[in-house]
Length: 371
Ligand SMILES: *Cc1c(COP(=O)(O)O)cnc(C)c1O
Image (cartoon, rainbow, N blue to C red; front, side, top):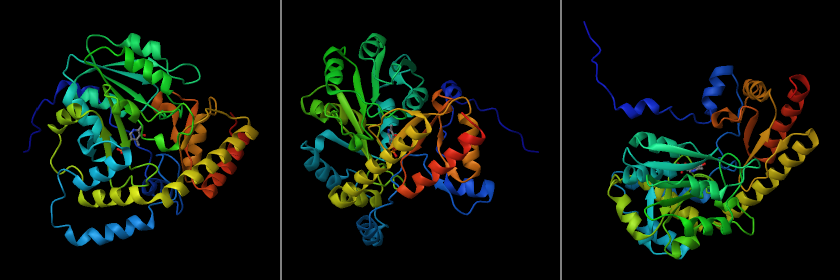
C-alpha cells in the first residue's frame, strides 16, 4: 500500500495563487467544440512573427546539439548598440518574467517589502511571495494615474524594490518623465526602482520615458524589457534588464547559466534588425486601438486611453457574464476580476478583422445581456 508522505513545503508558498494566464486557444476550442477562436487576452502581437525571424530560426536549427551562449554575448552587443549603453548594463533572461523572479531572489529577504501600485501586473507579487517578503500596495488614482507622493510615502526601512509598470498593465496609463525624476530623486538609499517597460514601444506621449535615460545617468533604476510584445516573440521567451553594472553583477549570481535558449537568442538578434515588422506592428496597433475607441464611444462604453496594445474598458455589473458569453462564442478577453475590477475587461488589440468581430459580438451582447 502506498502512503502519501507528509512533506511540508515552505510556509510562504501558501500565499501563492498560481498565475492565471489568458486562456489558451486550444483549451477553449476543446471546451466548446469550436473550430475558430480569437484570442485578445495576452497582449500578443496579432501579426505573428516576422518571416525574417522564422528564416533565422530555421537556419540555426542544425546547431541545436550545442549549449547556447551562456552570456548572450552577441545579443547583448546588439542591444547595447541599440540602447547606447554598454553590454555590462544588460542582463538577458527567459522572458521578462524570469527577470522578476531573479530580482526577487537577488534582493528580497523574508523581512523585506516591495511597493507596488494597484492594479498592476501580478508577477511582482509572485516574486515577493516566493521569497516570503511582504507586499505593500498603493492604489492608483481614480483615472489610474500614478500617485507619486503615495508611492514615496509607502516606502519604509524594509522596502527593497519599488515596481512601476509604465505603460501599466492592465490600465494602459503611464508614469511621466517628470514623476519618475521626482521619484528617483527622493528614493531613499537602498531601494531599487524597477521600471517595467514591457509596452514602452507603444507609448507615444511626449512626456513618456522608458527610463533608459535615468539608467545612463546612474540612478538606482532597473528597466525591464521584453521581446514578447511588439517583437512578436512571446512563445520563444526572451526579455532583458538594463541597470547599472553593479546591479547586473548581483543578479547574475542567481541566474541559471543557460537561461536563454539558442533559438531565442537568434530570434531576438534578428528582431532588433527587423525595422519593417516593428513599424508595421506599431501602425496596426494604432489603427486597431482607434477602431476599438470609436466603437466604444458609439456603444457608450467607458474606457481608459491606452499607451499600449490593450484597452481597459468598463462594461458594468454584467462584465463577467459578457466575458463568459464571449468565451462561448470563441472570443477570449481578460476579465478584470484578476485585478479586482469585476466590472472591467481588458482587450488586447487584435487585427482589424478580429477587432471587428469582437465589436459586433459585444454590440449584440450589450443588447441581450445588457450592461
Ligand atoms: C508581458 C509582460 C512582461 C514580460 O513578459 P515575458 O513574456 O515574460 O517577457 C512583463 N511585464 C508586463 C507588465 C507584461 O505585461
